[in-house]
Image (cartoon, rainbow, N blue to C red):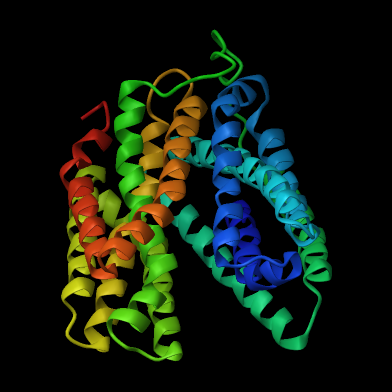
Length: 367
């Protein structure tokens, strides 16, 4: 439920971006600049989150951070200038990052209690939340509800849901034992390597989410409806595989799962590049969604097994992943401007193949 609430906030915001841009009075370029701010805010907050996880028990930490994330949804609908929008999106991103760290650290603790993989299902519920939030925003847009009112209602509904759900979570009784991590912690070498696998996965995720519709329109001459279908194909397959992915992880183990996932995702990206028709292009984006689905959950789970302070490792990996989110639009857009979107997706395929080859860093230390 906590993961679904987090995703619902993200989906509600993303689907209202056209209204936010029109309300502030900015174009695509300025909106792109503003959308860098959530990632920057998350990256600034992440290095301090390990200290918070050591000082406070998980149950109140998850509760406070998820409520703060819900409340922060009202902020992006308020500014009327680019500068103020950038400021509020920094705060919005910082609360997103802290809630992300707290709930993934809780997920690692639950996995330890279960003794098997459950993280993929948690991230599957996050994807379901994104779909629900974006659908809610689409409905609100259709009936003419003001975005400020909608965001306030969503925050008022989701905040208590997240808080109540957090009351039933686990407390890590060892979290306050031992020496605390430093106030500002950079990732260790192993966390960095795990984070780089996550970087490749997030790069592939954002390529599918942000660029699939444009690729169908520009490279395959598809209609607006078919272009939207590409996003749906990608998101739906990713959510479905995440919900079912734990069974695959249990059967194959994390290393083989990541290697197969990376191979599938790279094949999907190359199918997109080589697609002779719209149907094949849609199949390529569906394969891309299947391939990237479980890698980020596995990366967080692997980070939670590193060192005496799992939350610190998770924060380090999450910071690298958010860094990928900052790089992706610029890299894909820059390559596309210099050459074509097909060339950009060749780069995406290369990164996903690298992810498959680097899957060994997710091996359990017990193996």
